[in-house]
Length: 234
Image (cartoon, rainbow, N blue to C red; front, top):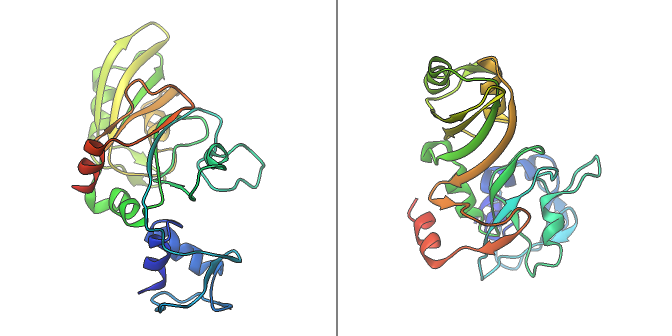
């Protein structure tokens, strides 16, 4: 089995994220640091990430978490900020987030030890939708909303077609539903900046078929059997 696939089967990360671990020299096989992609791993070999042995986990776990603002969606933060995984230190298996929500955002985050599922949900070819409830500064016009839908320039390239629905408006803010299927860094915030506004609050309420519903902020629950079937059909 290829090393990056082996790491994914251990729940370490998705295959693409595992490739970065390998490239960064954080993975060893039988004590030898591996940096080449495509390295084959055979049964009985000792595979370590950051010096800790990893092994395939027979049982897969899938959790929905309502991430609050003020948590970093990484395993470790060099600035010492609270991470999402700090909440799951005592969970019986190692979990990893599927994609990211930025520090200031909240909402639905999927955590799992199933690297293959992570790969499927994040691969650009799947175009898995992510729906955000956004409170945007000032009054957003229908023309500005259509600009979001057609695509705007973010970090030097156009965003893909999106959906932007105005829900309600006050003098100082507009509530919107914004749907994207890309996963660029702080994408929704940067898109809104391109039409002359600022995101005041951002909450992800849907990721693919998964809906946040009334799950309280800072709480988590296992996915239901129906939800598992839905995400495995992606």
